[in-house]
Image (cartoon, rainbow, N blue to C red; front, side, top):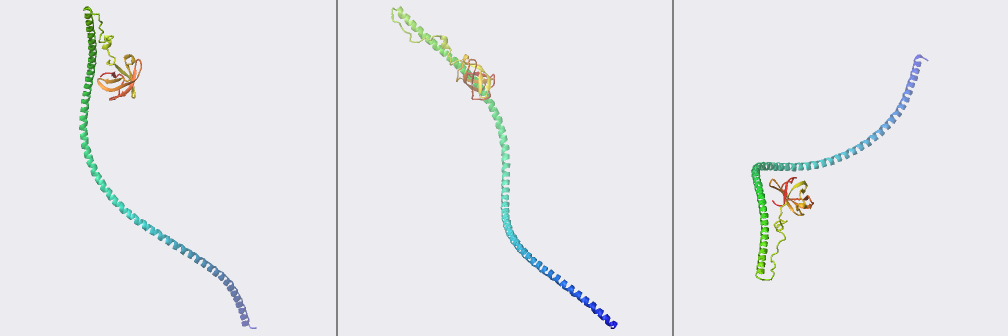
Length: 281
């Protein structure tokens, strides 16, 4: 066998070995490609399902967005209408404000004028009050004098009635004596009843003036310094004065021996301890 033949045999052997390795490698690789292909097909199907789901979700979101867009468009339109109405109300309020500002200015001017008038009226009122106080004080003095004169006149009238009664009694006694002197035995009874005492006729209890002072004042109650020992009775009204100024009246509700208490009436000023209390002015 020649060397060339040996070389060919060796080359064929090597080629055979290479071919076998290639076939073995191809078979193993083909199996791996098939598995990868099948896996790729499964992944592709999963991706298609996921894509379909995403498309459905996208369509749902689109519908929701469209509904939200429609609702927002309606709200925007409503807000525009409300804005227009508010602008009109604002214009109306501005007009009212301007009218009120003018009215306030007018009222302020009138208030200033009225204030001046009131100031003048306050001065006149103060002067009128002073004149009224003077007239009231004078009236109180005149009333007091009138009451004193009336009391004195009543006393004189009582004395006059007592004297008239005494005069009638004396005339009757004179007539009786003349009848006795002339020989008449008929006894003439006196026509006019003679008072038991001239002093009692001169001093009527109802016309006697009582006078005392306020000793305490508590709310609408006041205490006087005179009581039943001085002739005070329930229901009597005492006139309270201070420096010839009328303060109030006190109607007696409770009487003790040395003091009495009553309620305030016709209050002009708050009475104080020491004010004069009298049944006459």
